[in-house]
Amino acid sequence: MKRIPIVAGNWKMYKTVDEAKEFAHKVSGLHADKSQVDTVICAPFIALPALVDELKNVPVGIGAQNMHWEESGAYTGEVSPVMLESLGVQYVIIGHSERRQYFAETDETVNKKVKAAFAHNLAPIVCVGEDLTQREAGQTKDFVRKQVLAAVEGLTSVQAAKLIIAYEPIWAIGTGKSSSAQDAQDVISFIRTAVAGAFDQQVADQVRIQYGGSVKPENIASYMSETDIDGALVGGASLAPESFLKLVEAVVGGKTS
Ligand code: PGA
Image 1 (cartoon, rainbow, N blue to C red):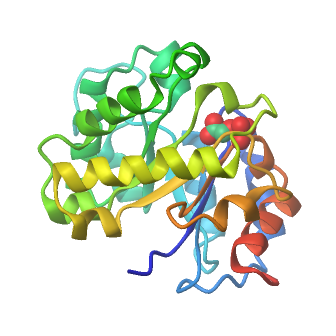
Image 2 (cartoon, protein in one colour):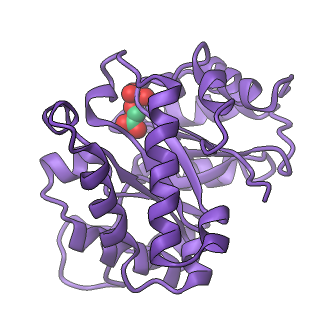
């Protein structure tokens, strides 16, 4: 089963709309072959309309970094899946560890958001990953399995097969201390087995599972050489257009522009 790798940039709370447009201009020459790689930029909400517009003829998908699960309602400050869908956004990060840690996201809200994403044609990038204490206590796999099973609860097999999971050990995010490719492969193949247990092997073979946490142009190839790692979710190294293009190049093993 050939899975198309997916390189997604997570800009977090960086870039004004003008800076986002500048980035878009600089990657507008990207010629990534969609049969070889999917590329995505997940930007702050207010930059999404400009990015959708500026990159409409460029093979870069646009994603949000969060959303509410309801279609509309009295939820001051929130953005709904309907709003994202109507804008032409195709992806949404769900349950990033920073949202779980600072904004009280739980496995339950993650599951509601995943279902809402599928209901509105948005591809969810569901983030899971252990913290350093859990890692050192040998709890990584138990913890990550629990997060994955909670996220996929109640999905149909058709939906589950379209899922993108990002395994991001919290201790590796923004720290420069990336997981070894071997360790990432070990956890990611375990996640695939957990998905097979919740659905079946056919679904598990289709789910794309990224590694995230201090991925850079210099180390992305080592992750990509592992059989179960289907790309990367990249924070810091996705902000500069040159770096983003290099990440994509490293995945397709050639020139992108
Ligand atoms: P990083 O962030 O690449 O800056 O470590 C990854 C993420 O938070 O998705």
